[in-house]
Length: 262
Length: 256
Image 1 (cartoon, chains in turn blue, green):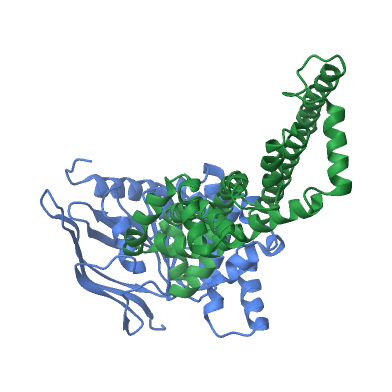
Image 2 (cartoon, rainbow over the protein chains, first blue to last red):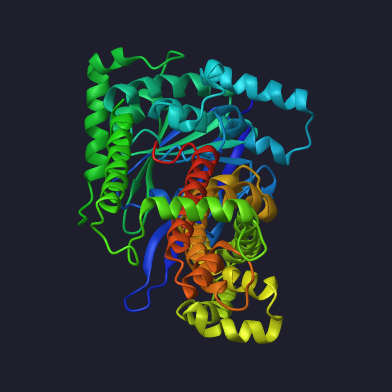
C-alpha cells in the first residue's frame, strides 16, 4: 500500500471573538485533524456551528486565535493558491469570459502561453465546459457557472480545495447533476476536497470521510470513513439500502444530539 | 419590436409639439417676443450658420464649448477615479480628503468661479477648472461607493488564486467598479454640461452658452431659441454616446 500524503494539517485551532458589550464568544475550540490527498471530506454541522469560520481560517481569510494550519511544510496564514476556495455563489469575474476566468490564477505563475492554454483546456474539459469557453458568466446557467468556478480554482494546482456549500443556490435537479460532476472532477483532479454542507444525504453520497461539528464552541465530534462509497461515481442506488438509512439516522442524531438553542 | 414602438411614440410626440409651434406661429397665437415664429428661428440659424456670430462660425462656438467640456471631463476622470478607488480602499485616506469634497460639493459653482478667475485668469483654464470641479465630486463619490460594494468573496477569491495587492487593484477592484464609475461619469457629464453655460457667462467670447447669453442682451430671441435647441440636442447626443459606452464596456450589467 502506498503511503497517503498529507495535504493539510490543522493543529489545535481555536477562535474567540472579542465582543465589545458582551462576553467573548468562543467560535471554535481545539480543532485538530489531517487531510490526505485522497480525501473527499464532508464537514457536516448545523448552521451556526462555526463551519464557515473554520473555512475562513483554512483559506487564510481569518487568523485563528490559537493553533496553526500547516500546508506542505509551511504554516498557512494568508490566502494563497495552495488552498483553493469555491464559494457559495460562483463569484466569477463578470467582465471575463469563461476561459479568461479559468486562466486568472495562472497569470501569477511564470508560464508560457502554450502551457497556460494547455492547463486551461485540461480543466475546461474536466468540468465539461470546453465548448463554452468564449461565453460570459451571465450567459451561463447556475450549474455551469459553479463548474467554471471549480475549474478556476483547480488550475493553480491547489493541495486542497475548500467548497463552501457550493450547491446551496441551485435547484434540486441541477444540484444532483453537480454532485455527479463534482465527484467526477474529484476523481480526475486527484486533489483533496473539503466540502462544507448541512445536507446529510449529500455527504453520504459523495464523501469518503465525514466530519461532524457541534456548536458552542464549534468542535469536531466525529471523524469517520464513509463505508457506503465504493464505486468511482455517485451511486444513488445506495439510497435504497438499509445501511444508508441507518447511517443517515445515526448522523442526524449525532448532529442533533446535543441540546443547543439556535 | 416593442422597443421600436415606444421610439415611434416619442417621435410622434416631438413632431406634435413642433407642429403646434409652427401652426401657432403662422396663425400668430403667440407674442413673437416670447415665442418667436419657427421661420425666424430657422432664419436666425441660417444667418449665424453663414456669417458666424461675433466673428466666429457656429461650429467654432460649439467646438469651444465641447473642448472645455471634454478637457474638464477628462481631467475629472483621470483624477476622481484613482483618488476614489484609493479612498474606497483606505478609510484613512477617505477621512483625509472627504471633508474638503463634502464642503465644496455643496457650493454653487458660480460662488467660487470668481476666485478661480482671480487665480487662473479669464482664459479657458478657469472655465475648464470650474467644469472639472463640478464633474469631480459625483464621479469621486460614485467610485468610492463602487469600491465598498465589491463582494468580499470576490476579493478573497482573487487572493486565493494568487493575486497580490497590485494585480488585485488593477485586475479585480478597477473592473469591479467600472459599471458604477461609468454611471458616475454620466452624472458628471450632466452636471458639467449644466455648469457650462454659467462658465461662459463671464468673460467669454466664444461657446454655445455664451452665444445664447450674448444674443439675449440684444433681445435676439430667435438666436436664443436655436442656441437652446442646439444645447439640448448636443446633450442628448453626448448622453447617448455615454450610454453606448456603458453598454459596450459592461455588457453583463442587468443580466446577472
